[in-house]
Length: 129
Image 1 (cartoon, rainbow, N blue to C red):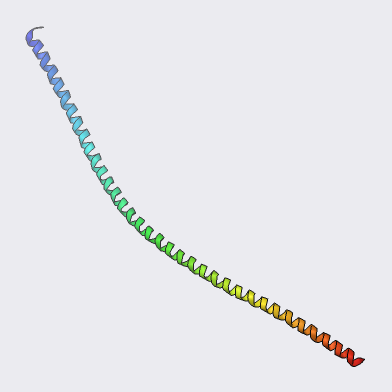
Image 2 (cartoon, rainbow, N blue to C red; image 1 turned 90 degrees about the vertical axis):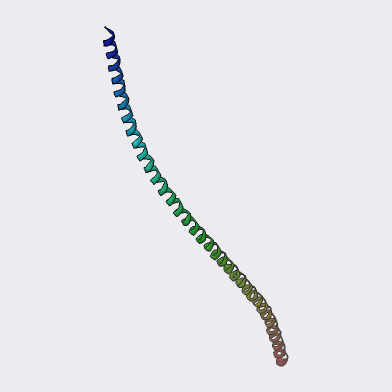
């Protein structure tokens, strides 16, 4: 093979290599374009996620307010329930004391009745004698 043929073969090889490189570059451009599209989609997803998080923060703030209101209302209800319990306890104690007093009065009245019966029985006995 002479020099011209060798040069021609080298040039043909170079042309094939350049053509392959061009093809590889074209493929890389397609890959880069796809990557750019994927990045744009990810940016949209991230934006949507940020929006969702912002909405959730608002919901959490509302939930905290609701829980705080429930806690306050519940505390007030418990206080009212406790006050009612104390009032009922005091009333029950007064009624219990009144019942004890009535029992004592009834016991005294029974003793008085018993004394009267005894006195009447003796009077009748004396009158019969």
